Image (cartoon, rainbow, N blue to C red; front, side, top):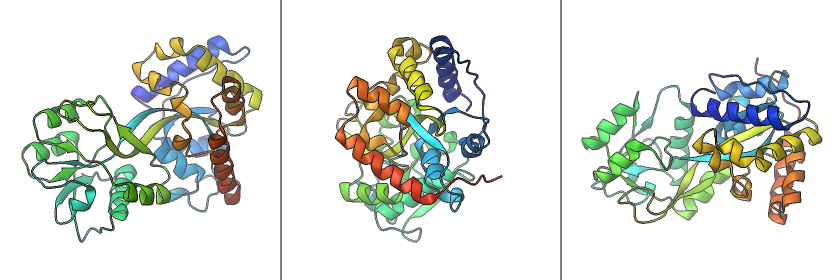
Length: 311
């Protein structure tokens, strides 16, 4: 996809072409990862840099992919985190998202399936409805940042990373604080919305953020076609991780794909390709916890049946 995602994809292509004998890879830019499932099914795509939000929906037959079987996609590893937790006005009295009741929350962007799911997940996790919370829309990042700075809203929602300058600005100027989710709500959210793993913002990530924040989010993913030969996926995985310094030299965000964190069992939203598993076993990264999670995921996707393209 465009921007940073495409740069990481180009880096993958360069490493594969250089280090996997007999293979030449090519990078292509897609406007949306919603097309990936059909592209795999039609044989025009073999690898992608996606996100857990869309990938999990496609593989688990949810959202607009409901009743279309399981998309033929498998995970190789995960990368950078995008946090989706609530950012609240420090004067709002919001200590957990349960306190959104009776407040103004700017979180929806028209046309964004991700933000609609974020809003629904938080409301569900805390037993709230849109009758309890004034859920507001925005059309640009400038709009929600201005609303927070001017105190026109009590809270907002938008994906952010550990280096988002607009979050730094809001936190440093005392206009926003990062809010942790409760363990009970996170359990409910991640069970119903498996595309949202639990992730942590380390203390000190932003100036003025003195405590660790636990919330949910999405991860960038390196995925592949489920039908690729195991030996090929093994070779691709080995090329990337045996030459990780070279791969990460193309863009700083690649460092988030580092092992063993990139295959933390809690981050696995879809089955891992058997070729990648072979590599991880050789390196001692594949544990009994991974094996149990893999079995569970395979059983779920098998029950959905073969994938039927949307178009």
